[in-house]
Image 1 (cartoon, rainbow, N blue to C red):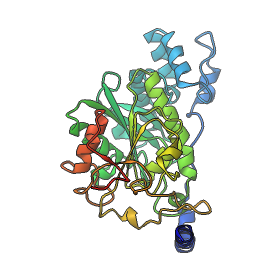
Image 2: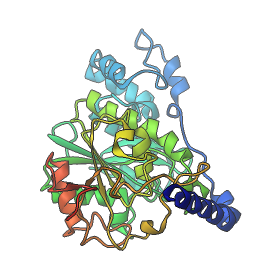
Image 3: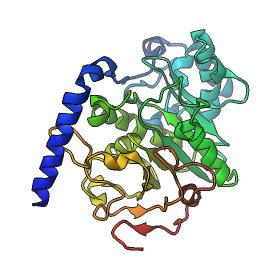
Length: 356
């Protein structure tokens, strides 16, 4: 009977998404940005170091880090100035060098949408203007902090909207700043918009295609942080971002995976994620995501609710959070728990199968 009900719910989801949104979803369908960063061909053709440069498409972050350690600071900066788009996005390259390279790359676009990203004091760890634009910004001292967190956002986020003033706690920049403040500044937090997010609630949001493309990028990004000398991060994955984190779970280098407002992680239970990271889930009573059927059928839907009793995640309290973007609002129980997790604690949470 339970399987039959899930099948009916899946059929209803398919009917709703295809019948109700296909008319506009096709117009908002997104093409995932993948592959090596812009300028990679010129980078690979540069013979000035007297030996091959690491291939941005195939070299591991550890190999990239090893290569840069063989260069003097002056030679590193020469490469960053000749190839800012590559060095700025090269996982494993020195963090400060990536900040410098990305400031150059942003200014070179002459695009008013991104001008503010090159303002003094901003620490842009990744920047790719292709598509709707991707960006990662660091709050705090990434290589000196004992604890590091990465915020992975959901739909409607790109390089132009990741730090919008409206609904600040629904953007990765606002989430990252709020999380760091809640830890008393004892962490470094990265607002990571390193994948092509869905636009709206059409087919892209109901399928895992964009999440699959983003999962590999997230896994590589986390390995790059550690290779560059940062602490192993905790991931805070909101909404569709939790689908990305679920698919990336077997490969990410993370201490914790924390999902909030999740439509599912493309797994039936924690064990299916095949990760050694601690897995946490938060969902407040007023979050509209509860109305989305937690099923996966014919490629639509993302599976069981990670905050549900059978999934097996550690439940994060969220009674005082409000709505789909309220989990990082100062003063909420969810943010207090997130801060405890970011600092390596247990947040006093319980397994989803436990009762109060």
